[in-house]
Image 1 (cartoon, rainbow, N blue to C red):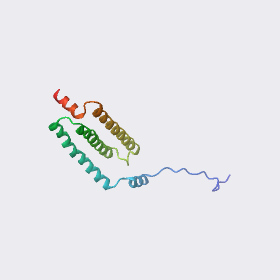
Image 2 (cartoon, rainbow, N blue to C red):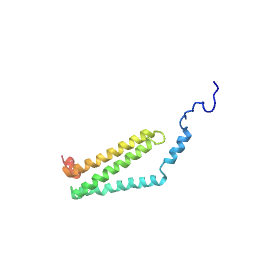
Image 3 (cartoon, rainbow, N blue to C red):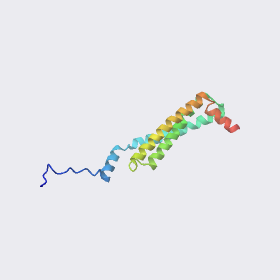
Image 4 (tube, helix red, strand yellow):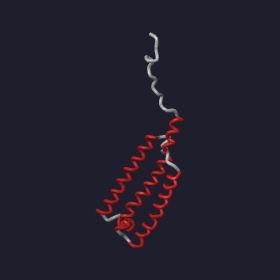
Amino acid sequence: MATTEENKPEEKPQGESYEEREKRMKREERGYAFGANHWNLERASAVALVPLISTQFVYGAHPVVDGLLGVVLPYHIYMGFDSCITDYIPKRVYPRGYKAAMWALKISFGLTLWGCYEFNTNDVGMTEAIQRIWTA
């Protein structure tokens, strides 16, 4: 039986090559402005922690400081882990691992915010807990 164009089996695509994948990932990559903004937000959260922590020593436990620490401290930690994931689990090399790590980071960040809120509203608060630990 002779093969004709109609009877020829379809060739399955072998998948994208390394170069094609690199080009696609490069298009999806974030730009330099994102990196600069990320760096500025990291530094802003670090600078904001200095007066928040020193306020505790000067004025003692205060609910406003508890609330701000409950947001700024987890956000600062989130930004640090985000940088670690971006550096050590690059999206280009480990697309699934990167996505899983980012989801885990976002979920843990949300749970940490919720835990800080619960601790500040239903318990002694972050600043009072730190004072109790240090004077124990």
